[in-house]
Image (cartoon, rainbow, N blue to C red; front, side, top):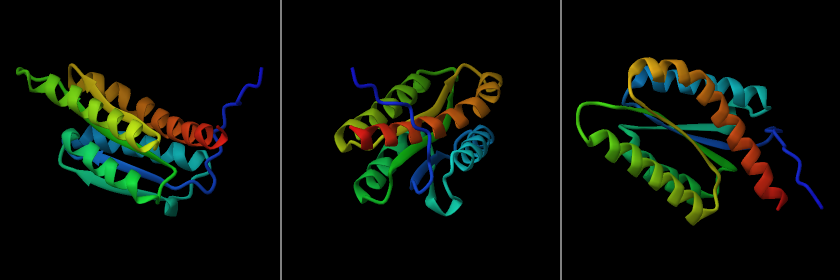
Length: 149
């Protein structure tokens, strides 16, 4: 059996990041951790493009445009959807995730989804550093995996 090895080499990769500005403290933490991990994996700062959007529901549209541009090897979605007192949380959480998956499958572009969906601010604060770094690793790993197939 031929096994494809995990490859986290990011040198020369071009990465697009879409960051939701809603819950900006969490978003900034995600971005900081993600950027640090991308550098650690060999991605040059000049090879990273950041686009910000008002909220998580706007992320799939910008990710789609980036995926279609041919300018990127992988994309990353960052943001936070924190439960409130209304059904709106479920709509935003579900529809943003569905939209991101749809873009990924339609375009063949790997997208690491690190839009946190949490019950409260404290949960998001605890998770932001880990998920931001994981998003960088996932994006690089998936781009390398798809290239090797």
